[in-house]
Image 1 (cartoon, rainbow, N blue to C red):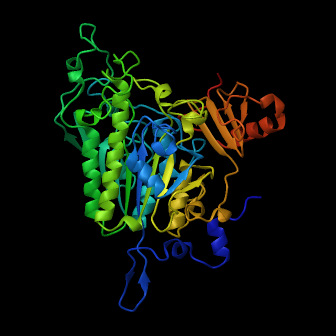
Image 2: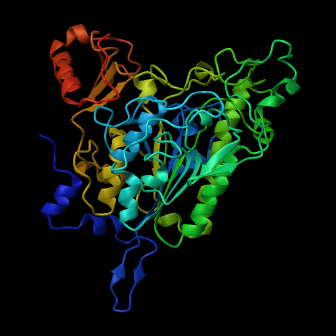
Image 3: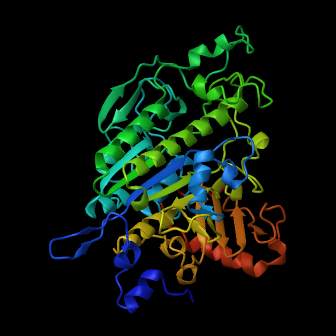
Amino acid sequence: MLELSRRNFLKAAGVSLGSWALSGCQGQKVNAVGKTNLRKPNIIFIMADDLGYNELGCYGQTKIKTPNIDRVAAEGMRFTQHYSGSTVCAPSRCVLMTGKHTGHAYVRDNFEVGGWKRGDPEGQLPIPAETVTMAKILKKAGYTTGAIGKWGLGGPDSEGHPNNQGFDHWFGYLCQRQAHNYYPTHLWRNKQKQMLDNEYFKAHQKLPKEKDPLDPQSYKPYAGKDYAPDLMERDALDFIRKNHDHPFFLYLPTPIPHASIQVPEDSLAQYKGKLDDKPYTGDKSYLPHPEPHAGYAAMITRMDREVGRIMKLLKQLKIDDNTLVIFTSDNGPTFNGGTDSNYFNSSGPLRGRKCSLYEGGIRVPFIARWPGRIQSGSTSDHVSAFWDFMPTVTDLLGREAPENIDGISILPTLMGKPQDQQNHEYLYWEYARKMQAVRWGEWKAVRKKPTAAIELYNLKNDIGEKNNVADQYPEVVKKIEEIMVAARTPSEHFLLAKV
């Protein structure tokens, strides 16, 4: 039987979790009658896009420089067995926002509602108006809520728009397809289209045959003046400044390093001519780039610079000690668009990449920092996932998590109380209307389609999922097959195809 959760343990003892978690918090205020009003912590959740498990220095990367994120890890807790909500963008974001894994989530795969031509409707399948999101919960708890980056859960006029899902402020790409170009013609500020100083060009095209791939001038058409991540960084810093004197939740789903490979010259200069490059001409979709290794590394380092500027501002505003900062990625590294996961060893020891339910597609970096609360330089091997974020935050605030979610609070682990941490019985994923995966203890199972045999791996001995031992453990396979049935509910949009 699973041990008592931290919340239930404290309830049984008659203790308020909110007072336990927030006691001694920096920024507390004393009122006229001498009672202490504990200030709720600010929460900043930064999520990279397609960043692999091994693409940060603190996780073993050697070619790409990430000094600021590495510092966040050194000053906080680094998780080694944390999982994303899915292996692709939209469902991972849905899982994060709702606390439900892809067996129960409304969005279980990328689902386009528009086309690829200029002027086509923007957006993906919108989450319903009545969805209980993390932003709605925090807004009700008195937080100012902001989201800046890439959304993917509803287009401009849909009920899934972030302003309809609990966010006071939104700036960025509403549509994932638009986010394939870092020099778009527009972004969205709340429900208004904000035009940028960029000329339109397609985000998917090859270098014309008449263009010399060794001539830098051949790539000039694939850039503009307004680099979207820079505008998002500016907006994020402004949001923090405007709201630093009261509790805020800032969700930063940056589009970096998702292809296309595009980065300003000042960042490219750090890697130019240093990473064994040859031109990428666009043959694997997305835009050409003269030095794709250098460009990809420069994108990540520029994102790292943004994280550093955010951390610096928190200290300048004297809210650093009362701000929980989380950094992670929405899924594993990609395989196209000029990216080279083999060259960067992007998945590390893990098998698979984005669009795969092997570990490389779903195990992601996860770093949490909160000075004075989370032990600096600590590491946790607790098995956790995106759907744990919602109950962790409600736990932190001393509130009940919504019913019928799949997450478990990881607050005890963050607070250095692993003995009080409840564990998942299992973790579950499904993708592409056919693939399923289960993590059950040290066992990991993958089924590529409902009619296929279940593959079984022991992650304790085989983190790379190289040795399928299903034939040796039929009782484990039977249990996992039962989980694959019990862990999901029917979906009108995402039926498991019998193929």
